[in-house]
Image (cartoon, rainbow, N blue to C red):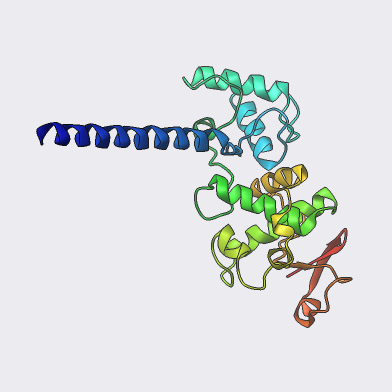
Length: 232
């Protein structure tokens, strides 16, 4: 009887060990195949208002003597590295959260709080779905409208809330939201998050050739970019 119990116990231990090993392997595989988060950081190749602000701060520190043009080139990167050395930061030439904080600059957010990677990905996905094929400024403008809605009292106060508000975006119902994200949409999302707003503060946009929605056609038009009218 005791031998039988020992045998059953050994079998149970072997089964439990196998389940544990399979679980660890499965978790490791899932982690290795997950897409890496796309960082919203100012670094070589970045452009926009945040880069301009960084250049201005570095110029005030006597570390940057180049043009304040909002383009993160090698001169800006070298100045960032000098600033990081001076302040005991990781010297990588990238203006991440710690470097921005030391410069006295908060990461550029228009979301009322910390931006998560999922927020960034969703904004880029919606820009791509709604404005694929539009001029780059038009893509940034679509992103700006989404962020303007986040700040507006008549709309949800998160990017996800605005994106998934019923009837807000045709891309959510026609399948475009599931298409691959255009590379330009990632850049447009960052530009919009950095504060660039080609829409002139619009909270609506529509393509007059594709919609007969009376409400949209009744909105005061601010300007037109590509196929979209941007409205207040």
